[in-house]
Each structure stands twice: as C-alpha cells, then as structure tokens.
Image 1 (cartoon, rainbow, N blue to C red):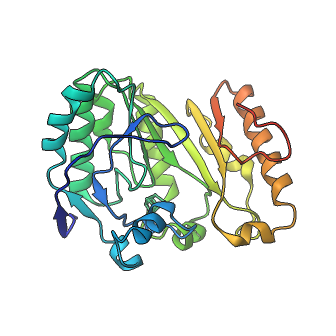
Image 2 (image 1 turned 180 degrees about the vertical axis):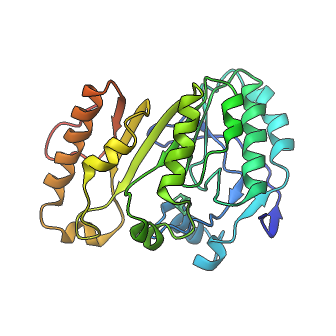
Length: 261
Ligand code: SF4
C-alpha cells in the first residue's frame, strides 16, 4: 500500500529537544497507526493546524522531496550530528505502507553514507533489509502489551505485537543493535497484564526504555499510580541488570524519589 498524497517541505533535518535524541527526521505527516493513548504528535499537529482531525491524521502524507532535501542538508550539518532518529512525530515503518518503508530505508542509507549512525523506532514491522545497513544503527519497537485486543483498541493501525517482536529478533540475530520502548505503559485500569511476560518476550534486546503514560486522565484515576510506576521502573532496572541489558527510565516515570539515570 502507498500514501494517497504527498507534500514538499523546505527543510527536513532538525535538532530535537526530546530526551534521548540528537537530530531527527520526520518524512511523513500523520500516522496510520492512530494510537489512542493519545498520540502527542497528533495533538501537536492538530494544535498547529497541520491536520484537522483524527481521520486526516491516520491518512499519512509522504514528503516527496525528502531525499533531495537531505542531500543538501547533510553536507552542511554532518559535523554537528552525532546521530539521527527516525521518527518523533510519525512512524518510519508504518504498517503495510511500502512507500514509507522504502523511503525510510533510503534515508537511513543516505545518513549512514556520512558515517552518521541512526536509530529507528516503530510500531510496524522492521524490514529485513535493515540487516544489510550500518551495524552502528540501532532498531527499536514499541511494546506496551502482548494482548492483541488491547492493541486493536489502543494502536488500531499498528502491526501485531508478535510480528514486531519477530522482526526485531531477526535483526538481533543478524548482529544488529536492538532496543525496545516500553512506553507509554498503561496502568491496570486500562489493562491487567503480566509485566514480566513483556520483559521476557524482549529479553534478547540490547536496550530497554521504560516510560509511563502521560496526557490521559485515567492514569491518575488509578489510586496508586505513582507507586505502580515506581515499582515497574525498578523491576525494569533489576531485570536489565540481571540480563546485562542497557536501560533508560524516562523522566517523570519515577516520582517521589530521585530520578535514576
Ligand atoms: S505510532 Fe507514534 S506517531 Fe503513530 S499514532 Fe502511534 S504514537 Fe502517534
């Protein structure tokens, strides 16, 4: 499947203020995954008049001059860039969108040709072809549950959880660096689930990032949500230490205590 529409932009590479980012590229407007947590990128796009409503948001529009822009921007910025992340306001491997996946691979290759490593995060399926790109890259999936009914409710257009995990494992087995973003993790009043099962399912990954759910009132309706997130964060830390996995706990996930780095 391909996007029905395209647009052109004036610039593409930009420095992000996001916690674990350096430079980033968002070469699509909108995202068919249509997450209901809600999606911060959608809220911002609506606030700044880039999309009118949810239906606009879930019909992605590809940036048709992305490669052209990058070809101009990379030589100018290459000395400043430590890494490039795909993507903060859309998904680079949008489920079943061939044109977006192909463009993302082209972008990764182009960035890598300047010896700049990339990170990519998806709720789609990571293409096998990524195994042939620079081994300095790092590929990630988001995984907040293993329950497909929950996925269909919260991330309706995304790839099934097992397909995401399999694609990550494939790249891991091919010697690529892999990571898992367990974020935004829901409180039990969204879904009762076994957190250990999620950790075990991705225990092969090189890094785990854990973060709480924001921008949803239902979280604070769960009586002990602060303690709940603290306990889970420490569980992630213990699990990662035991299994020699790198970890990062997102800001404001642990509260009432000093933030752990
Ligand atoms: S995958 Fe990311 S960008 Fe796409 S809808 Fe979900 S949260 Fe938003």
